[in-house]
Image 1 (cartoon, rainbow, N blue to C red):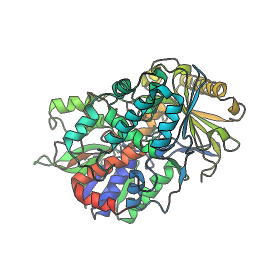
Image 2 (tube, rainbow, N blue to C red):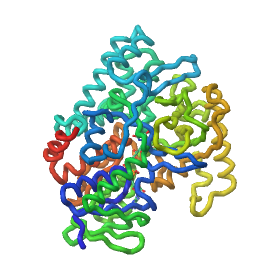
Image 3 (tube, protein in one colour):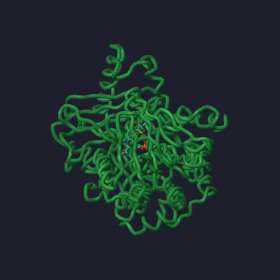
Image 4 (cartoon, rainbow, N blue to C red):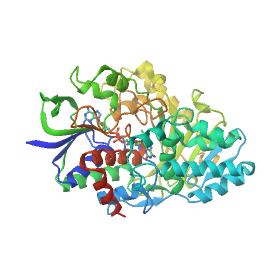
Length: 493
Ligand SMILES: Cc1cc2nc3c(=O)[nH]c(=O)nc-3n(C[C@H](O)[C@H](O)[C@H](O)COP(=O)(O)OP(=O)(O)OC[C@H]3O[C@@H](n4cnc5c(N)ncnc54)[C@H](O)[C@@H]3O)c2cc1C
C-alpha cells in the first residue's frame, strides 16, 4: 500500500497535520519513535497524581481566537474543557529584589491599566508597546485569517528588531522592561535574541485570554489521535524513521523505519527537530550550505523540573501561575536560586488524578554533561541520581522561601533534568522548545528543496500548543492550498 503522506513525529504538530490531511481525504500514517503519541505533551503519573509536562496553559483558546478555531476545525471541543485562568491575574510575577508582585490580567485594556498603575510615568510607552504587539500579531498568517501568507512580511516579523530593542525604544524603567520580557520563558530565548514580531505572535494570544484544559495535555493528544483514526489515518508508535527513500527523480518515495520496515508514500512531512533532517536524507541530496544551516540551528534553553504532590489543590496556584524572579536583571547564567522559576498548579476542577505543582527552571544541557552518555533505559549512574535529588531539594526550598503559604503543603516529589527532556522528547539537544527562533537564524520553511518533502512543528512556526498547531496549518496550507484551509477555518467557531 502507498500512503499519500507519511508524517514523521507524533507530537501535536504531526498529529494535527495528519488529521488535516486525513480530513481532506488523504491516506496518512504518523510514525512516532516513542511508545505513545505526544510524549512531550502527554504528562505522566507519579504517586497517584497526574503531572503535566509539555502543557500548562495556553493563550488564544477563547471562542473566536486562533487556537479555539483550530480545535473547532478538528472537532476537539466535544472532548476538551477549557478552564479560564484568573482574569485579574493569570501570571503573578514575584520579585525578591524589591518584594513587589505584579499580576498580568487578561485583556489588553486591563493590562494597560495594571501596568500604568504600577509604572505611571511610563503610561504612553506602555500603550505604544502594547499597540505594537497587537499590530505585529495581526500580520501573522492563520493567526489572523485575513493576513496574507507572504514571505516578505513573515521575514520582517521574524528578523526585525529584537524584543529588547523594542522595549528599550518605548520604555525606560528596567523593572517594567524585565516584567514585559518575562514571558520569553514561553519560548526559551532571552529578549536580546528573539525577534519582536515573533514574541508578539506568541504573547498576543496570552494577553487576550489564558486557559488550561481540564483534560490536560494528554487530553489534546488523545483527542487528536481519535480524530485522525476516525478519518482513516493511522499511527505507528515505538519505531522511529531512520531514512527517507528517494526515487531517481529525487522525490521521496518512502520512509525506512528503524526495524527495517518500509512505508511507501507520495509525500512526507517531518515534524522532528530540523537538525535531525540531514541524518534522514541520503548524502549529497542537500546542498552543503542548507545542511550547515540546519545543523547550525541554535537550541532553546532546557530546564530542571520539579513535580510535587499535594493533598489538595494549592490555593495560591488556583487559576494562576507564579513566576519567581530573584532580580530584574538578566540572569541566564546565574546560580539556580537566581534564575526565573515558573510554577504551575493543577486546577481544582481538572479531570486529572491527584494534585500538586510543577516548577520549571531554565537550564543548559551542559549542566548535566557529566552524565550525557546515560539513558533511562540503560540506567543513570548514582552520581546523577544524587545530583537530581539535590536539584529537586533546592527547587523546593526556593519555592518555600518565596511562597511561605506553600510551606509544608508539598509532599512526595519527582524531578527532571535536561537529560530527561532530551530523552523523552527524542531531541538530542534537549531544549524545552527545540530549535530556537532568534534574529539572525533562519528556521526551516514548510517547503524543502525536495518537492514532496515538507517540514512542520515548533521549529517552523513557534513553540507551544498554539505554535505547533499553527505550524501544521501552515504546512498543510502548502499542500492543500492556503485559501482553501483559511476558508474552512473561517467557518469554524
Ligand atoms: C517542560 C515543558 C513545558 C511546556 N509548557 C508549555 C505550556 O505551558 N504551554 C504550551 O503551549 N506549550 C508548552 N510547552 C511547549 C510545547 O509542549 C511544545 O512546543 C509542543 O509540544 C511541540 O510540539 P511539536 O509537535 O512541534 O514537537 P514534539 O512534540 O517534539 O514532536 C516531535 C516528535 O517527533 C518524534 N521523533 C523524533 N525523532 C523521530 C524519528 N526519527 N522518527 C519518528 N518520530 C521521531 C518525537 O518523539 C516527538 O514526539 C512546553 C514544553 C516543555 C518541554
